[in-house]
Image 1: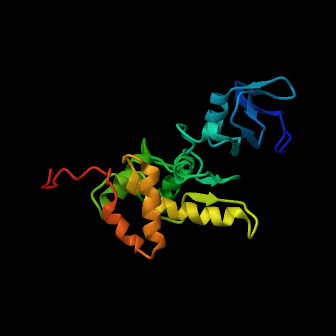
Image 2: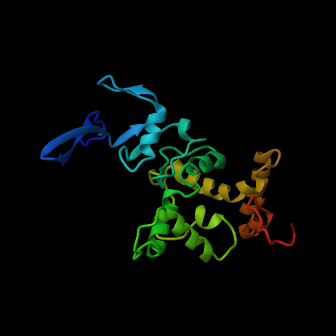
Length: 238
């Protein structure tokens, strides 16, 4: 059996047996034995080379590795949403932009959390059919789209409520600086989107945070946000 430890470099060999005309045909293929990997080009203790692209593709599959550790290399421009909805911040970023970028790697179009909720709520669309559909996900997404309360593609392709959500995990010690910093980052995220696309964003965010700290109702910020969501085709304002 392959080693199950985090640091294992062994590759499990899986044998497949097929009987044809009383002849036993045995074939083999390799499967990753690492439970966790880092997102980088590196050579392990056995001399095997793992490329960054190969590590990313392996993590974006239903198989090992199940944990991917990365520095700021994986913070922007990469997608890890096919089979991941948890982000562990081993250290907190210095601004809300970087926090948004990190969590945006798993909060994406048809992400894992969205599909899990879709399967939980719309499985009946494909169950009980005489013949299995060619694309069950398409049927479930179409049903969820038709049931959406708002006419937008944000629901269900980006957001679909259910028991699973994109999770932010921040391991930190009580009474440490991270406790205060995390509270500040959460508060900053509320006003960060107001400054999206504006010049001198840092100054505007600082000013809005001052208003929020002075007791201004932050729920009013929603009317000031720049909406990037496309309007419905039947909108009379178009």
